[in-house]
Image 1 (cartoon, rainbow, N blue to C red):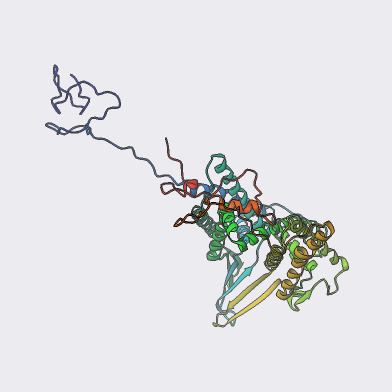
Image 2: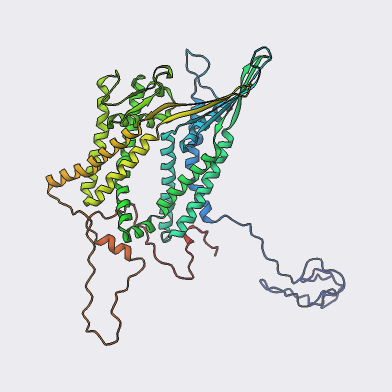
Length: 530
């Protein structure tokens, strides 16, 4: 009994054609598709003969989202690892010996501290219920918001994200892809920022917890600890997006800087200032770690804080050495105190050694400006940018909290207390002085000693002369064509002073103009399957 290869129906033997669909029993060639031109015979067909079935493919994420996810793995792991280390190394209940303990609430508390690296405030809420035995009975609520930034975790997160972006860019260059265009880099920044904000929001939600503080039948207290979710999400998204724009949009930024003089000066100043400040942060972290391990009196109460505040302590030393005025709580927090290098307020003269890191950073900044042969205009921009960055870092170490309490009778009281801070005027003045000294005075002295003068402003590149052709009556003037991808490169090559440096291991592909049919986002798309 033959089986029809078209519809699967069985026919009585012998038969040359199918009794159901009328087609011959000869099997079609492999790869041929039988079109359903004829209608089926009597009875329904057991499997839709002659119908073309398209394969169903599961939709996959674009390569841009996968790249954003990969570069955020290491920074997210750093936040979780910091919380794990902090929770595992906390002291036990026995004060005589230090034991290793672990608890879910401890991990959530340390994760909340690690998330302060994004600048989001820490929040706590204490609900207390007072029994009728007391005069002021009922429910009272005490809330507090603490503002601090753990710089060690912040810079670690930024460094890991920067390294991941550079590895992804290096992989693109090895594959022969061109550098992303400005729209593609902006879209990738939005992807990475959105994913970073979502991850931070999830971690912040996991870190929120409630702890019972005990009590009896007349008094019971519970405390809720967490971080402000909206500032956390926004700051994490903005930080990731800004870093992606700086790394993936570097080629487009350099091309734009070659056309705009002020942007080129700012980019050049950023390259010199970022290297000096990066080395300064490493030096200050190492010095503060040594000081914290050797003495408990230098940083006072902050010296017993988490290890993630060690970079903050180093910047505290830098602020005192620069001449800024530090503000504190004073004795028992009742009498605010202030001291600076010019008024040590009873402290030892050893604080004068804090001038050495500040002086070393200024000398390194001056040597960088001199070696790069920056003209005086770019040196002035460098001095201003260095002053802004150091002042912002120093003011970011300030810690304060705002507390409010609502009594059972409905009365509320709000109090703001500065745990540690700085005089803003003194910070700005000291930053401007050291920026001018490092970017203006030191390079001028080196130029005079080495006899390498520089102009006031970078010279404009000379255009090549046009060929002499006798003018024709009624003809248009001859204009040299300028390639889209070559205009910025010519200006960079011809500028003898203060050219924007390309500090990469491999030469990046130029950001060329794409044709009408080419995809500007091809660098972040999944390659089509062959």
